[in-house]
Image 1 (cartoon, one colour):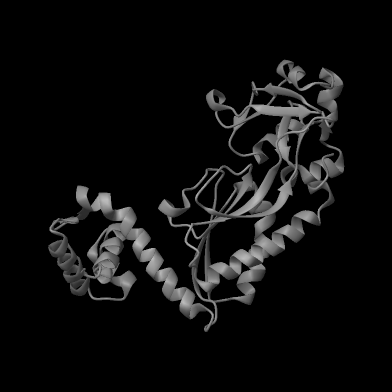
Image 2: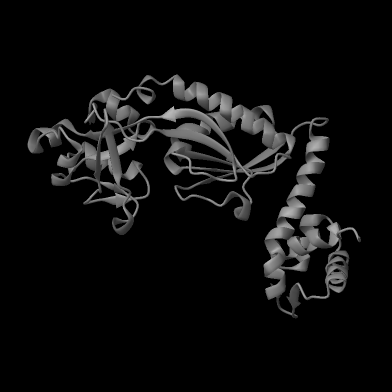
Length: 308
């Protein structure tokens, strides 16, 4: 059986991802002619066209598109194996792609990442902050932090710490509209929702064998919790938010928890990585550092670990 043409596959992936032979050659540290020959050799051995070339552009063929994800995985695995073998013998260096939720990243990640990069100045971190769930493999992320009840997944997951949430409102709102004593009473209040109105996430409460489900009715729907806080403080409604977003407001009494005898599904802070256990030393180092630092940070904040 013939060995795979790893160089050809690596050049194909580089051209597809960079959009051209010149950019791919620069990224790989090769000449444009070398990259072109490698891809042509691969195409000849496979008997298919992977890339359509013209004088103005290079596009991935239908056949190439069908093979691109597997090619990326092959190149990533080979790269990870090489870096894993070498990494422990050298100073940590190179890029790391990290994804994290928007609010958590802004409020929590800045100081830990600054400390890590100060200790490892040759490491380059590309941080993407978004409340969307990224496809780590397809989008090329090395690590992702996620605050959620984790679904079954092929991803490797490290559970760092519980992240409490509370149903909260301002004292002024509760004085005017009354304090709900049962989750179903939330239907008569201005209850902000996470996501789009048509796809608002139901809130599932439980208490000693009793369950209650309520779907937020608005008036505000958003995919980021921070934007809800000013409305709540101004007396505009009720919401369910994690404590890392409302920490200051809880401490100052601008927001107060309600329905404290009811529980919502416990969310946790998870650190996710693609399924391959071969990871560069720099990625392993950041993963271990974040797991340790964020666990101590979360547990060290009283209002983060109190249900109110």
